[in-house]
Length: 226
Image (tube, rainbow, N blue to C red; front, side, top):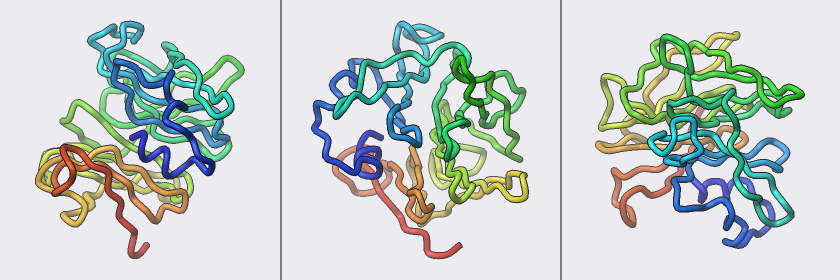
């Protein structure tokens, strides 16, 4: 995930030391920048300060940019974190809305949205996506407000392997049923951590189902039509 962040966002060179305070002995996952590029949100697993303690699979933390380095991670608080797996999957263009990969206290699976307030973020509100199902422990997702699309990796009842990548579109204020991106993208194993370029034409993702350099490697695919 950090590789994706480096090649797609940073317009100026950064050294490896830029993330010295962010990367620790814990699991840092799925980083995403606010639209102004000044704050980085990411998920940390197995940290004693998480809501569920060391057994917590992931809480949302953030780091503020300080020149060419990123500051010490700060836990994002109880409003947008719970004992489940929490992650940030996107922001609105003005940075006033945050999209979250968790359904919190909703009775079905899905994503949520919170609004920026003077005290931080509001209580997340559940967003209904028809027939959203994921049997996997994790939900890796990315929301693009440019093309109003949600790409995510999940394992419903039928996939090409384990977790596959799906897309849902926001049309006339309603989310469409998720569609599997098919065997061109999805392999017989796992596809994780999808994200889209700013114009929505390039899909980045990780896969361990292709002949790469080791386990999960990073791939990209260009969209051929609408």
